[in-house]
Image (spheres, rainbow, N blue to C red):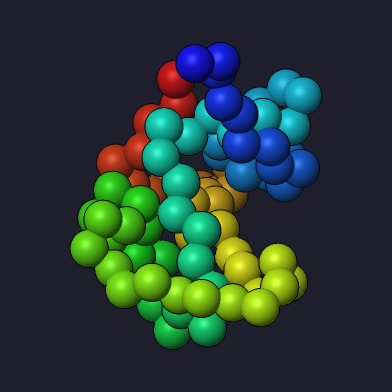
Length: 83
């Protein structure tokens, strides 16, 4: 199977890599509604496998819960590591 990439253009994310390739070992994409309701601690390693599905109608209704600002003073220990 060819190597898969998640492309992301958010260059201030800790997981952003050259060529707009996400370097996180896991990501969580969910609906904006869930993203707005859940805290920053709601993320891929802790919640993805057991969360309810979150259907949406368009890509505009989705968000990435893996984002962590690479310029933040205190980096959150989120269980997802750069490779």
